[in-house]
Amino acid sequence: MKIEGKEYRTIWFDEKNQAVKIIDQTKLPHQFIIKDLKTVKDAINAIKVMEVRGAPLIGGTAAYGIVLAIMEKNDLNFIKKSAEELIQSRPTAINLKWAVDRMMKKLSGVNNNELLKVALDEAKAICEEDVKFCENIGLNGLKIIEEIYKKKKDKVNILTHCNAGWLATINWGTATSPIYHAHKKGIPLHVWVDETRPRNQGANLTSYELNEEEVPNTIIADNTGGILMQRGEVDMCIVGTDRTLSTGDVANKIGTYLKALAAKDNNVPFYVALPSSTIDWKIEDFKDIPIEERNSEELSHVEGLDENNNVKKVLIYPKKSKVMNLAFDVTPAKYVTGLITEKGVCEASKEGLRKLFK
Image (cartoon, rainbow, N blue to C red):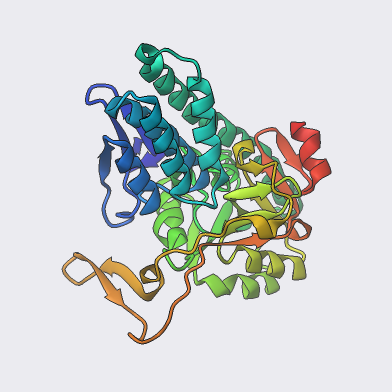
């Protein structure tokens, strides 16, 4: 997708400089910086501090992390240790482990002198696959938006939470892909963007990328969605997911569950967009999903531009106050209208997912 009129992806391999390039998302929206990852530690750190974020992009970065490990030290024990450290860097997003496991399986039995080429080809394949998956998610979700537009014969208002946009994937996004496809087709629409505390990924990233694609949008405080639904100003919700169980339960950014409850109470369709790499086929009880708890400073401090256009971080809470910063919550399948995947739209249930993927 575009930034200032130029096409970008969120991650790519620079053949000339033998480095992985990423867009440093901790600097958006006030600064656009492309950063080099040259070691596996760089990749792990980029995931941990959220220079890259979003389940599919974390997976892509982890795949390239294995490539960087091989470039650094073509030794099986080092590569295995690096794989374990990559998996541990963020626990909730299932794509991370999926990508690392896929890379290690591909490398099994490969001669040392061929490891780098095989790894690089596979990392690129994982990223290309994600682009295609997200494009297909968009085409499948487009049908839902078209149906709403046919019935309403007026602008379609969509509410989204966090950033499940192209910045969270390699391109297109998950939740935003249907929006981009509808916009390109000329369907009038407007997006309500939850600011998504504490890191404000909705305000800082989703609104930013929608602006760059000229999609009408409005940032709202996280607790505004309910009253908008009561007023009839939301036609549908689309969110992404960091891990979806085979039961249809959905782990996503903290606050997603509350949006689903409000949508259910107001008969607003609530869809979750995801590639199949985000499905966890093993865990069945959502209470077993590891929920990441992040640094309290993300909640107690905010960053912004001062009067001199310098980025500053400021404390907004009383110094003595305790802070809990859970990064994700789980929305039970019964509150999900449907799952939008690369293979089609299905019910949020074992039966629904099996019809598409088994």
